[in-house]
Length: 117
Length: 114
Image 1 (cartoon, rainbow over the protein chains, first blue to last red):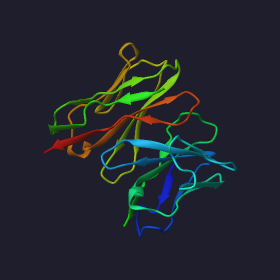
Image 2 (image 1 turned 90 degrees about the vertical axis):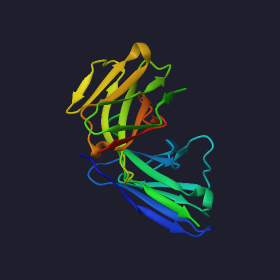
Image 3 (image 1 turned 180 degrees about the horizontal axis):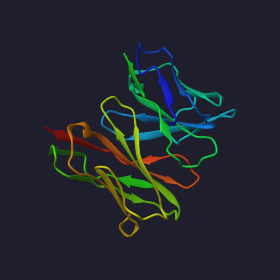
Image 4 (image 1 turned 45 degrees about the horizontal axis):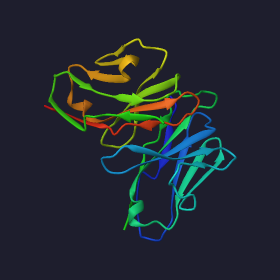
């Protein structure tokens, strides 16, 4: 089945630094990828929809300048947390949709645990 | 607006017991999709099932079964003869047709004790 690879799985950084998280579709092309955020023992909240070759669509309340999304190819989307602060500590997870299919399985990456000191 | 409610925050049962996880959803769309995902301690989301709003047939997959009832806007998930490996957080999710993005419930943390 389709596989989505997400790296790194865990990152610890100092406050004020930027962190980049990669989401790759390994055996399929993904025109659309989604970025979710999950607080401890909480549900997943959609942050933004990443579209290949165009600007990402952010959900209400998500800072565009804080969470930079780039979807430069059909197999890679990146989320950069700029000037990270402790309140940005969270579990970030991406998902990808197989091109040409709507509402199929929406394969998920393994997630990235970000801890900002 | 769409909303998914998983009223059971945590469930703990002894191995081999049957357990049902409840999911109630709200949507004004006539066409939509419902999902269940499993999130083990490692964090990744494991797809379990997708059901579209026009298909009310119940489904069974091994020890897993799902009961979809549009009349009560529920999509419940039952694990029979539970095993320790079933311990995880389970999420129910809803997606309007064509919208692609998922609205998740709060999740139910299931613990199966040996």
